Figure 1: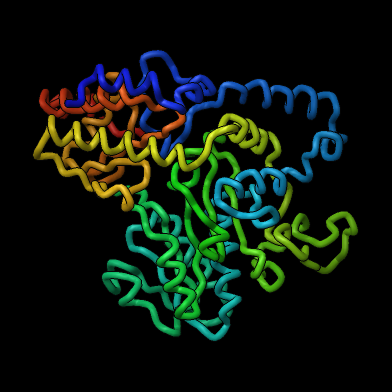
Figure 2: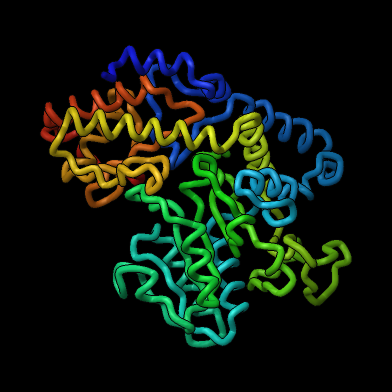
Amino acid sequence: MISRDTCVARDLVDPLRGFRDRFVIPEGIIYLDGNSLGPMPRNAAAVLNRTIEQEWGHDLIRSWNSAGWFDMPVRLGDRVGALLGAAPGQTLVCDTTSINLYKAIHAAIGLRPDRSVVIAEDESFPTDLYIVEGAMKSAGRPMQRRLIGTDGPSIDALLDRDVAVAVLSHVNYRTGELLDMAAITRQLHDAGALVVWDLCHSIGVVEIAFDRHAVDFAVGCTYKYLNGGPGSPAFIAVAKTHQAAAQHPLSGWWGHAAPFAFDRNFRPDAGIKRFLCGTQPIISMRGVDAAIDAMEGVEVAALRQKSLALTELFMSRVAELLPGLDIVTPRQASLRGSQVGIAFDKGFAVVQAMIERGVIGDFRAPDLMRFGFAPLYVRFADVWDAADILASCINSEVWRDPRYSQVAGVT
C-alpha cells in the first residue's frame, strides 16, 4: 500500500534528492509548473551579477573576447546538444523557439524543392501552426498544409511523395502524450520527407537520441525543464548531413562565414553557425549557462525514470481520490512525457484555488488543468500532497467563490 510515509521514505533514498538544493523553491510551495517555467537555479543570481557588474560594467566591449560572449551560442549549443544526444557542432542556443522553428521549416522545404506539402498536428502549440503558415508563404512556390487530426487521423493517412517535411511535437503540450521519435522519423525518411521536432516539452526530462535516430532538425526552449529563466534563448539543432546545403531566410551577420570581414554579400558559415542571425542576448544566455550547470552530474535516463514514477504516482492517487475525473494523459509509460493533463470544466477556478493553497500548476483553455513533474526538484511527498489538495478543491467546489474565476492576462 502506498501512503504519504512511503513517499517520504522514497524521497530519502532518491538518488536525485540532492539536486533540489540547486534550485530556489519558495518555502511552502509545491511547484508543478516547470513545464511552463522552471525555477531559478541557486547560482543564477551570482552568474548574472558577474556578467552585469564585471563583464559588462567593468570589462565593457572587451568581454566579447575575454568573457567568450561571441562564442556562447556554439558553446552552449554543444552543452544542450549533449542532452539531445547530438554530437558537437550541430546545436546552437540562440533566438526564440518561433524564430528557430521558422529557420528549420524554411530550410527543410528548401531541401525538398520538388515537394509541396507540410504535415503538422492540429493539436500543436499554436505558434507552431502559425510559423508553418509563415514558412510556407516564404517558400517561393505554392505549398499545402496537412493537419493530423483534421485532414487525416495519422501520419499514415497523410504521408505521400508530395510531403517535404513534417513538423511534430515530441510531447503534446496539452495531454503530455509522447510520440515515438525513432519510428516516426524512420517512416518519414522512408517516404523521402524530412522532420522538424519541437522538443519544448521533452528536453531535460525525456531521453532523446538526435544522432542515433537520424533526426534532421529540432528546436526547443530552455526556460521549461532546463530552467534557463523567463524568455531565455531557445535552441536549434541541424544534422551535419544537412548543414552544407540548408539555407534559412534570416541571413544575419552572425551566420556569415567571416562576420568581421564585413562583406557586402552573404556567404554562409560552412557549419551550424550559418543558422545564427544577429547579436544574441548575452545576459539571458548566461542564465542558460547557470541552468545547465545546475544539471551537472545527472543522467537523462535517471531523470526519465523518476519522471515516470512521479507522474504514475500522481495519476494513481488522483484516480483513487477522484475516480470520475478525466485524466487525458496516457497511463502507459512509453506514451507520456513528464506532465499530467486533467480535463475539468471548472478547471480554471480549481487551479487558482490550488495556487492559493501552495500548489502551482497551470490551465489551458477550454478545460485543461496541467501539472508538470520536474524530477530535479519535485519530491514524491509533494506529489502526494498535491493530489490531496486537488481533491480538496474539487470536493469543496471552490468554483463557487467568484475570486477564483477572475482571469488575468496569463493563465
